[in-house]
Length: 332
Image 1 (cartoon, rainbow, N blue to C red):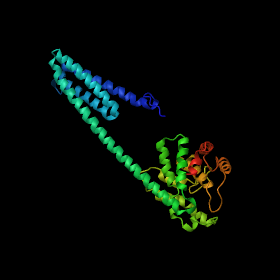
Image 2: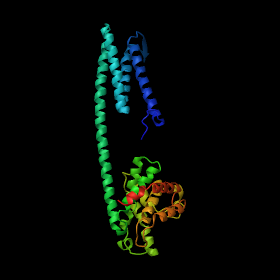
Image 3: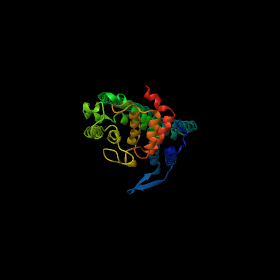
Image 4: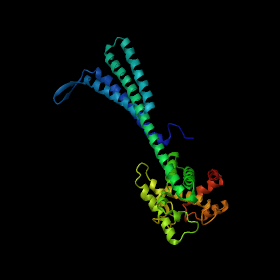
């Protein structure tokens, strides 16, 4: 459960800004009251100007501060502004009852400010709700397109039906285990769904060959990584979506393909997908071998930690495997 304490470390800058804005409001409000009763003058370009004329300037500044509350802090700023303005109306009304008619313009300005804050808050919230609705619709549309593509990818290879979906689920679980946020884990899920999209450009004779591939056929098969990158690099709405397709066959020791990257030079999402992809491959029957047992898979992941796989990701996988998380997905 997320910590909702206002004084969390990541909330301190916002809290400081909030306090400064309140101080600025009361400061400008104080200057407005002081200047409104002043008889002094000051010179501007050789012309005498009464200091009392600054009251309107400071009063306007205080209203701008309250509007900033509403815009930047939304509900919190709105309620704070309402309390401040209501308290100010109360004080000004009290002074009016004590026969201080000079407070009448201030009451009018405060009431106008109160109405303005209400209108701005409602309008701002309506715009934000509309934007959030459109953002969610775009995300849902993008996810549905990605799901459709993953079905097409798996349908092309009769031996790997459901492979992309399972790898995506494993990837998301691993990402969460490794401390990524739900939003990032979902992003990695989408990237993993399309990690084999380059297979669309591979001949069915090679993909569905009932036996071991020749060296030439294997070289052709390996091109699916670069083909996937070429397809996905044009997608601009989701950053790094091509990384899974391009780099999921890189090895931590640098002996993978297509770029022979090693260690942390391999994108983080690709290192996670690499383990998820290998696990699903080993736990599935392929033309050239039967599925491996659970013990054999665990041994392979352990033995390849630090060579084929990122040891941090491999460790997280082994912990999740021991918890029995992956077995539920495999039997869906």
